[in-house]
Length: 376
Image (cartoon, rainbow, N blue to C red; front, side, top):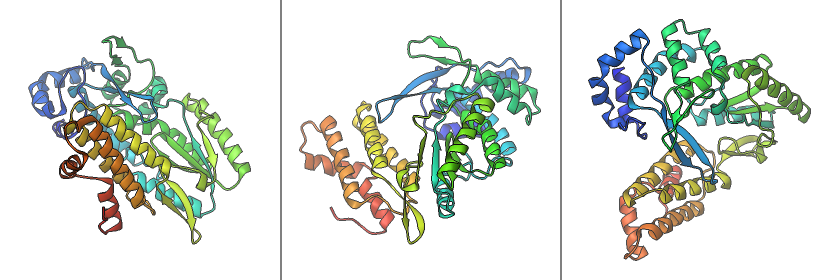
Protein backbone atom coordinates (compact mmCIF):
# COMPACT_ATOMS: atom_id res chain seq x y z
CA UNK A 1 0.00 0.00 0.00
CA UNK A 2 3.00 2.28 0.57
CA UNK A 3 3.94 2.12 -3.13
CA UNK A 4 0.33 2.94 -4.01
CA UNK A 5 0.60 6.06 -1.83
CA UNK A 6 3.71 7.16 -3.69
CA UNK A 7 2.00 6.64 -7.04
CA UNK A 8 -0.95 8.74 -5.91
CA UNK A 9 1.35 11.49 -4.68
CA UNK A 10 2.88 11.75 -8.15
CA UNK A 11 -0.50 11.94 -9.86
CA UNK A 12 -2.26 15.24 -10.44
CA UNK A 13 -5.96 14.66 -9.97
CA UNK A 14 -8.78 16.48 -8.24
CA UNK A 15 -9.93 16.01 -4.68
CA UNK A 16 -12.68 13.59 -3.69
CA UNK A 17 -15.38 14.30 -1.13
CA UNK A 18 -12.76 14.02 1.64
CA UNK A 19 -11.10 17.20 0.30
CA UNK A 20 -7.60 15.67 0.48
CA UNK A 21 -5.15 16.13 -2.39
CA UNK A 22 -2.86 13.47 -3.86
CA UNK A 23 0.15 15.37 -2.48
CA UNK A 24 -1.23 14.79 1.01
CA UNK A 25 -1.86 11.09 0.33
CA UNK A 26 1.22 9.65 2.07
CA UNK A 27 0.79 11.65 5.27
CA UNK A 28 -2.95 11.05 5.47
CA UNK A 29 -2.72 7.34 4.64
CA UNK A 30 0.03 6.70 7.18
CA UNK A 31 -2.02 8.46 9.84
CA UNK A 32 -5.08 6.29 9.17
CA UNK A 33 -3.28 3.13 8.00
CA UNK A 34 -3.94 0.90 11.01
CA UNK A 35 -7.66 1.55 11.24
CA UNK A 36 -8.19 1.09 7.50
CA UNK A 37 -6.08 -2.08 7.30
CA UNK A 38 -8.11 -3.49 10.18
CA UNK A 39 -11.36 -2.61 8.40
CA UNK A 40 -10.10 -4.17 5.17
CA UNK A 41 -9.08 -7.38 6.94
CA UNK A 42 -12.38 -7.86 8.76
CA UNK A 43 -14.45 -6.83 5.71
CA UNK A 44 -16.02 -3.74 7.28
CA UNK A 45 -14.29 -1.16 5.07
CA UNK A 46 -16.78 0.79 2.99
CA UNK A 47 -15.55 3.05 0.17
CA UNK A 48 -16.74 6.64 0.11
CA UNK A 49 -18.83 7.73 -2.88
CA UNK A 50 -16.83 9.40 -5.63
CA UNK A 51 -17.19 13.12 -6.20
CA UNK A 52 -18.96 13.90 -9.46
CA UNK A 53 -16.88 16.18 -11.67
CA UNK A 54 -17.85 17.52 -15.05
CA UNK A 55 -15.20 18.06 -17.74
CA UNK A 56 -16.24 20.13 -20.78
CA UNK A 57 -15.52 18.44 -24.11
CA UNK A 58 -14.36 20.38 -27.19
CA UNK A 59 -17.69 19.63 -28.91
CA UNK A 60 -19.63 21.31 -26.11
CA UNK A 61 -20.75 18.11 -24.41
CA UNK A 62 -19.86 17.20 -20.84
CA UNK A 63 -17.78 14.22 -19.74
CA UNK A 64 -18.64 13.07 -16.23
CA UNK A 65 -16.06 11.41 -14.00
CA UNK A 66 -16.04 10.45 -10.34
CA UNK A 67 -13.05 11.36 -8.17
CA UNK A 68 -12.54 8.90 -5.27
CA UNK A 69 -11.31 9.89 -1.82
CA UNK A 70 -7.56 9.72 -1.38
CA UNK A 71 -7.81 6.52 0.72
CA UNK A 72 -9.93 4.89 -1.97
CA UNK A 73 -7.44 5.98 -4.64
CA UNK A 74 -4.69 4.26 -2.67
CA UNK A 75 -6.72 1.08 -2.08
CA UNK A 76 -7.82 0.93 -5.73
CA UNK A 77 -4.20 1.33 -6.82
CA UNK A 78 -3.22 -1.52 -4.47
CA UNK A 79 -5.92 -3.77 -5.95
CA UNK A 80 -4.77 -2.89 -9.47
CA UNK A 81 -1.15 -3.70 -8.56
CA UNK A 82 -2.20 -7.18 -7.43
CA UNK A 83 -4.67 -7.96 -10.24
CA UNK A 84 -2.91 -6.47 -13.26
CA UNK A 85 -0.16 -9.14 -13.55
CA UNK A 86 -2.80 -11.85 -13.06
CA UNK A 87 -4.79 -10.69 -16.10
CA UNK A 88 -2.00 -9.32 -18.28
CA UNK A 89 -0.74 -12.79 -19.13
CA UNK A 90 -4.06 -13.70 -20.77
CA UNK A 91 -5.10 -10.40 -22.39
CA UNK A 92 -5.21 -10.21 -26.17
CA UNK A 93 -2.08 -9.12 -27.98
CA UNK A 94 -4.07 -6.58 -29.99
CA UNK A 95 -5.53 -4.80 -26.95
CA UNK A 96 -3.54 -1.66 -26.16
CA UNK A 97 -5.34 0.82 -23.91
CA UNK A 98 -4.51 1.20 -20.19
CA UNK A 99 -1.95 -1.58 -20.26
CA UNK A 100 1.70 -1.50 -19.13
CA UNK A 101 4.28 -1.02 -21.89
CA UNK A 102 1.57 -0.53 -24.54
CA UNK A 103 0.33 2.67 -26.08
CA UNK A 104 -1.53 4.32 -28.92
CA UNK A 105 1.52 4.01 -31.22
CA UNK A 106 1.42 0.21 -30.93
CA UNK A 107 -2.27 0.19 -31.91
CA UNK A 108 -1.60 2.36 -34.98
CA UNK A 109 1.38 0.21 -35.99
CA UNK A 110 -0.80 -2.91 -35.83
CA UNK A 111 -3.55 -1.15 -37.82
CA UNK A 112 -1.06 -0.35 -40.60
CA UNK A 113 0.04 -3.98 -40.59
CA UNK A 114 -3.55 -5.14 -41.16
CA UNK A 115 -4.12 -2.53 -43.88
CA UNK A 116 -0.94 -3.51 -45.70
CA UNK A 117 -2.14 -7.14 -45.62
CA UNK A 118 -5.27 -6.21 -47.56
CA UNK A 119 -7.73 -5.83 -44.68
CA UNK A 120 -8.77 -2.39 -45.84
CA UNK A 121 -12.48 -2.40 -45.04
CA UNK A 122 -12.59 -0.85 -41.58
CA UNK A 123 -15.35 -0.95 -38.94
CA UNK A 124 -15.01 1.42 -35.99
CA UNK A 125 -17.47 0.20 -33.39
CA UNK A 126 -19.07 2.59 -30.92
CA UNK A 127 -20.35 0.80 -27.82
CA UNK A 128 -23.07 3.01 -26.34
CA UNK A 129 -21.90 4.60 -23.06
CA UNK A 130 -19.64 1.65 -22.29
CA UNK A 131 -18.38 2.61 -18.82
CA UNK A 132 -21.87 3.66 -17.69
CA UNK A 133 -23.42 0.33 -18.72
CA UNK A 134 -21.09 -2.30 -17.29
CA UNK A 135 -23.34 -4.86 -15.62
CA UNK A 136 -22.14 -5.47 -12.06
CA UNK A 137 -23.26 -9.11 -11.86
CA UNK A 138 -21.66 -9.96 -15.21
CA UNK A 139 -18.49 -8.16 -14.16
CA UNK A 140 -18.30 -10.08 -10.89
CA UNK A 141 -18.96 -13.42 -12.60
CA UNK A 142 -15.96 -12.79 -14.84
CA UNK A 143 -13.77 -11.85 -11.86
CA UNK A 144 -14.87 -14.95 -9.91
CA UNK A 145 -13.28 -17.18 -12.57
CA UNK A 146 -9.76 -15.99 -11.80
CA UNK A 147 -9.75 -14.27 -8.39
CA UNK A 148 -9.83 -16.74 -5.50
CA UNK A 149 -9.72 -14.16 -2.69
CA UNK A 150 -13.38 -13.71 -1.76
CA UNK A 151 -12.62 -10.66 0.42
CA UNK A 152 -11.09 -8.89 -2.57
CA UNK A 153 -14.11 -9.77 -4.71
CA UNK A 154 -16.43 -8.30 -2.08
CA UNK A 155 -14.32 -5.14 -1.95
CA UNK A 156 -14.40 -4.74 -5.73
CA UNK A 157 -18.19 -5.08 -5.71
CA UNK A 158 -18.34 -2.41 -3.02
CA UNK A 159 -16.37 -0.09 -5.29
CA UNK A 160 -18.69 -0.79 -8.21
CA UNK A 161 -21.69 0.01 -6.03
CA UNK A 162 -20.22 2.92 -4.05
CA UNK A 163 -22.03 5.55 -6.14
CA UNK A 164 -21.25 9.25 -6.48
CA UNK A 165 -22.04 12.55 -4.80
CA UNK A 166 -23.54 14.98 -7.31
CA UNK A 167 -22.82 18.69 -7.60
CA UNK A 168 -25.86 19.37 -5.44
CA UNK A 169 -24.44 17.17 -2.67
CA UNK A 170 -27.00 14.41 -3.16
CA UNK A 171 -25.99 10.75 -3.25
CA UNK A 172 -26.55 8.88 -6.52
CA UNK A 173 -26.70 5.09 -6.19
CA UNK A 174 -24.74 2.99 -8.70
CA UNK A 175 -26.84 0.13 -10.06
CA UNK A 176 -24.56 -0.40 -13.05
CA UNK A 177 -21.40 1.00 -14.58
CA UNK A 178 -17.82 1.60 -13.44
CA UNK A 179 -17.18 5.22 -12.53
CA UNK A 180 -14.39 6.75 -14.60
CA UNK A 181 -11.83 8.68 -12.60
CA UNK A 182 -10.50 5.99 -10.27
CA UNK A 183 -7.51 3.69 -10.74
CA UNK A 184 -9.54 0.50 -10.97
CA UNK A 185 -12.10 1.19 -13.72
CA UNK A 186 -9.66 1.00 -16.70
CA UNK A 187 -8.48 -2.45 -15.61
CA UNK A 188 -12.04 -3.64 -14.99
CA UNK A 189 -13.00 -2.34 -18.45
CA UNK A 190 -10.20 -4.36 -20.05
CA UNK A 191 -11.23 -7.48 -18.12
CA UNK A 192 -14.85 -7.04 -19.24
CA UNK A 193 -13.97 -6.38 -22.88
CA UNK A 194 -11.50 -9.26 -22.98
CA UNK A 195 -14.63 -11.41 -23.43
CA UNK A 196 -15.15 -9.65 -26.78
CA UNK A 197 -11.46 -9.93 -27.66
CA UNK A 198 -11.50 -13.70 -27.17
CA UNK A 199 -14.63 -14.07 -29.34
CA UNK A 200 -13.07 -12.02 -32.16
CA UNK A 201 -9.94 -14.16 -31.95
CA UNK A 202 -12.06 -17.33 -32.03
CA UNK A 203 -13.73 -16.11 -35.23
CA UNK A 204 -10.36 -15.08 -36.74
CA UNK A 205 -11.50 -11.47 -37.05
CA UNK A 206 -8.64 -9.00 -37.18
CA UNK A 207 -9.05 -6.19 -34.66
CA UNK A 208 -7.37 -3.59 -32.50
CA UNK A 209 -8.83 -2.35 -29.25
CA UNK A 210 -7.80 0.70 -27.27
CA UNK A 211 -9.97 0.73 -24.13
CA UNK A 212 -13.53 0.76 -25.52
CA UNK A 213 -12.46 1.88 -29.02
CA UNK A 214 -12.86 -1.31 -31.05
CA UNK A 215 -11.76 -1.40 -34.70
CA UNK A 216 -12.33 -4.41 -36.97
CA UNK A 217 -10.56 -5.06 -40.28
CA UNK A 218 -12.13 -6.97 -43.19
CA UNK A 219 -11.21 -7.81 -46.79
CA UNK A 220 -14.55 -7.07 -48.48
CA UNK A 221 -17.84 -5.18 -48.14
CA UNK A 222 -19.70 -8.49 -47.83
CA UNK A 223 -17.48 -9.52 -44.94
CA UNK A 224 -18.06 -6.15 -43.24
CA UNK A 225 -21.82 -6.66 -43.01
CA UNK A 226 -21.50 -10.19 -41.64
CA UNK A 227 -18.80 -9.26 -39.11
CA UNK A 228 -20.71 -6.23 -37.88
CA UNK A 229 -23.93 -8.19 -37.40
CA UNK A 230 -22.30 -11.09 -35.53
CA UNK A 231 -20.24 -8.73 -33.36
CA UNK A 232 -23.30 -6.63 -32.52
CA UNK A 233 -25.22 -9.74 -31.45
CA UNK A 234 -22.34 -10.94 -29.29
CA UNK A 235 -22.00 -7.56 -27.54
CA UNK A 236 -25.75 -7.52 -26.90
CA UNK A 237 -26.01 -11.08 -25.58
CA UNK A 238 -22.71 -11.56 -23.74
CA UNK A 239 -21.90 -8.03 -22.57
CA UNK A 240 -25.44 -6.73 -22.18
CA UNK A 241 -24.62 -3.64 -24.24
CA UNK A 242 -25.67 -2.00 -27.48
CA UNK A 243 -23.74 -0.72 -30.48
CA UNK A 244 -24.55 2.83 -31.49
CA UNK A 245 -25.07 2.32 -35.24
CA UNK A 246 -25.19 6.08 -35.85
CA UNK A 247 -21.68 6.52 -34.44
CA UNK A 248 -20.24 3.24 -35.72
CA UNK A 249 -18.22 4.09 -38.85
CA UNK A 250 -17.49 1.89 -41.87
CA UNK A 251 -15.08 2.88 -44.58
CA UNK A 252 -11.75 2.58 -46.35
CA UNK A 253 -8.55 3.65 -44.56
CA UNK A 254 -8.34 7.02 -46.35
CA UNK A 255 -11.85 7.85 -45.06
CA UNK A 256 -11.24 6.90 -41.43
CA UNK A 257 -9.76 8.63 -38.42
CA UNK A 258 -8.63 5.99 -35.93
CA UNK A 259 -7.52 7.13 -32.48
CA UNK A 260 -6.95 10.56 -33.99
CA UNK A 261 -4.79 9.29 -36.88
CA UNK A 262 -5.58 9.40 -40.57
CA UNK A 263 -4.04 7.06 -43.15
CA UNK A 264 -2.69 7.43 -46.66
CA UNK A 265 -0.91 5.08 -49.05
CA UNK A 266 2.59 5.77 -50.28
CA UNK A 267 4.77 3.40 -52.34
CA UNK A 268 2.36 0.54 -51.68
CA UNK A 269 2.38 0.97 -47.88
CA UNK A 270 -0.06 2.68 -45.53
CA UNK A 271 1.26 5.53 -43.45
CA UNK A 272 -0.25 7.64 -40.68
CA UNK A 273 -0.73 11.38 -40.53
CA UNK A 274 -2.51 13.90 -38.30
CA UNK A 275 -5.75 15.06 -39.96
CA UNK A 276 -7.32 18.49 -39.58
CA UNK A 277 -10.07 16.98 -37.43
CA UNK A 278 -7.50 16.02 -34.79
CA UNK A 279 -5.83 19.43 -34.93
CA UNK A 280 -9.19 21.20 -34.54
CA UNK A 281 -10.00 18.98 -31.55
CA UNK A 282 -6.73 20.00 -29.88
CA UNK A 283 -7.44 23.68 -30.55
CA UNK A 284 -10.93 23.42 -29.03
CA UNK A 285 -9.59 21.58 -25.99
CA UNK A 286 -6.96 24.26 -25.38
CA UNK A 287 -9.59 26.99 -25.72
CA UNK A 288 -11.85 25.18 -23.25
CA UNK A 289 -8.98 24.84 -20.76
CA UNK A 290 -8.16 28.55 -21.02
CA UNK A 291 -11.82 29.49 -20.65
CA UNK A 292 -12.11 27.36 -17.52
CA UNK A 293 -8.90 28.65 -15.92
CA UNK A 294 -9.21 31.18 -13.12
CA UNK A 295 -5.72 32.65 -13.39
CA UNK A 296 -2.94 33.13 -15.93
CA UNK A 297 -0.56 30.58 -14.36
CA UNK A 298 -3.23 27.90 -14.39
CA UNK A 299 -4.03 28.61 -18.05
CA UNK A 300 -0.34 28.36 -19.01
CA UNK A 301 0.09 25.11 -17.08
CA UNK A 302 -3.02 23.51 -18.57
CA UNK A 303 -2.08 24.60 -22.09
CA UNK A 304 1.48 23.28 -21.79
CA UNK A 305 0.29 19.96 -20.33
CA UNK A 306 -2.32 19.58 -23.07
CA UNK A 307 0.25 20.17 -25.81
CA UNK A 308 2.80 17.82 -24.23
CA UNK A 309 0.21 15.06 -23.82
CA UNK A 310 -0.95 15.56 -27.39
CA UNK A 311 2.61 15.35 -28.71
CA UNK A 312 3.21 12.16 -26.71
CA UNK A 313 0.25 10.58 -28.52
CA UNK A 314 1.05 11.78 -32.03
CA UNK A 315 4.83 12.18 -32.21
CA UNK A 316 5.21 8.86 -34.05
CA UNK A 317 2.93 9.80 -36.94
CA UNK A 318 4.63 9.19 -40.28
CA UNK A 319 3.58 12.70 -41.31
CA UNK A 320 3.37 15.37 -38.62
CA UNK A 321 1.44 18.63 -38.73
CA UNK A 322 2.76 21.36 -41.02
CA UNK A 323 4.75 24.38 -39.90
CA UNK A 324 1.84 26.53 -41.04
CA UNK A 325 -0.63 24.62 -38.83
CA UNK A 326 1.74 24.81 -35.86
CA UNK A 327 2.17 28.58 -36.20
CA UNK A 328 -1.57 28.99 -36.60
CA UNK A 329 -2.22 27.07 -33.37
CA UNK A 330 0.39 29.07 -31.48
CA UNK A 331 -1.19 32.29 -32.76
CA UNK A 332 -4.61 31.11 -31.63
CA UNK A 333 -3.26 30.31 -28.16
CA UNK A 334 -1.56 33.70 -27.94
CA UNK A 335 -4.70 35.59 -28.94
CA UNK A 336 -6.88 33.54 -26.59
CA UNK A 337 -4.59 34.17 -23.63
CA UNK A 338 -4.06 37.82 -24.53
CA UNK A 339 -7.79 38.46 -24.73
CA UNK A 340 -8.28 37.04 -21.22
CA UNK A 341 -5.10 38.12 -19.44
CA UNK A 342 -3.40 40.79 -21.54
CA UNK A 343 -5.16 43.88 -20.24
CA UNK A 344 -2.80 46.87 -20.07
CA UNK A 345 -0.10 45.17 -22.14
CA UNK A 346 0.52 45.28 -25.89
CA UNK A 347 0.45 41.93 -27.66
CA UNK A 348 4.15 41.99 -28.59
CA UNK A 349 5.20 42.32 -24.94
CA UNK A 350 2.63 39.70 -23.95
CA UNK A 351 4.06 37.28 -26.54
CA UNK A 352 7.59 37.78 -25.18
CA UNK A 353 6.30 37.02 -21.69
CA UNK A 354 4.44 33.96 -22.95
CA UNK A 355 7.48 32.66 -24.84
CA UNK A 356 9.51 32.82 -21.62
CA UNK A 357 6.92 31.24 -19.35
CA UNK A 358 5.37 28.60 -21.61
CA UNK A 359 7.72 25.61 -21.64
CA UNK A 360 6.28 24.20 -24.85
CA UNK A 361 4.65 25.40 -28.07
CA UNK A 362 3.44 23.74 -31.25
CA UNK A 363 6.25 25.35 -33.20
CA UNK A 364 8.83 23.87 -30.81
CA UNK A 365 7.30 20.42 -31.20
CA UNK A 366 7.37 20.58 -34.99
CA UNK A 367 11.00 21.65 -34.69
CA UNK A 368 11.72 18.63 -32.48
CA UNK A 369 9.86 16.30 -34.86
CA UNK A 370 11.69 17.61 -37.93
CA UNK A 371 14.97 17.88 -36.02
CA UNK A 372 15.55 21.40 -37.23
CA UNK A 373 14.69 24.89 -35.97
CA UNK A 374 11.78 26.86 -37.39
CA UNK A 375 11.98 30.58 -38.05
CA UNK A 376 9.20 32.92 -36.93
